[in-house]
Image 1 (cartoon, rainbow, N blue to C red):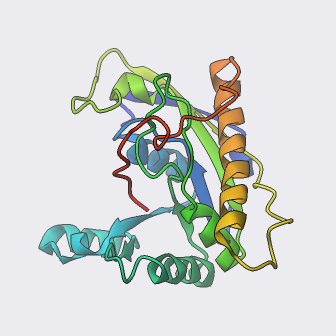
Image 2: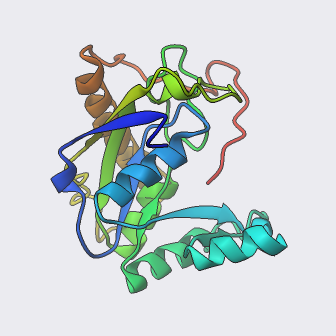
Image 3: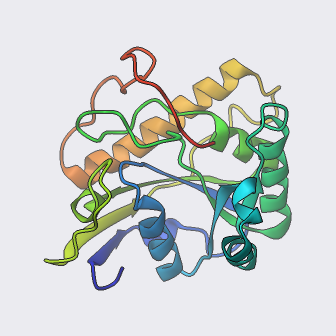
Length: 223
């Protein structure tokens, strides 16, 4: 990844140096997790990702995931509600830095702006009472375009990543965690991510975020 791209990190000091938190970046390329992982490593934190529990059953892959401290999450309907809470508790107890893509899948927005978010990242932050850090990156699409499968190695690309201030969730904490509260808090998170990306791109974000449901797009995202 160092050969493929140079990394320009803006406001990297805003990433907590210790303690648990959730990092919520934008998502428009399949290689995004690797890029974010490299950036977090450069900033001195080991990234943890939520991975399907079934992957941990693969002999070699499972051992590597466990050795790297990644977090298994069941994808069954019965477990879907409880598993994020277990992951949140583990993050808080062990002081982990967990990466969650709030969009759930690659953005469907035609211009690669963040689309409507899912509530998993906010729910974990509220349940565990840990900071929720927004982030945005730009340039990754030059390494691997959205829906692409080939990596462009030459010429070397520049990827810029901007870390934001913790999302202000103060008005949501200490209240019953309802669907409406999670939706409202997720809108705040997505607005923060969009603003960071707008600063990187040097242009304003769309006034309305792309909504897959309204645009007849099928969501196939992860938690």
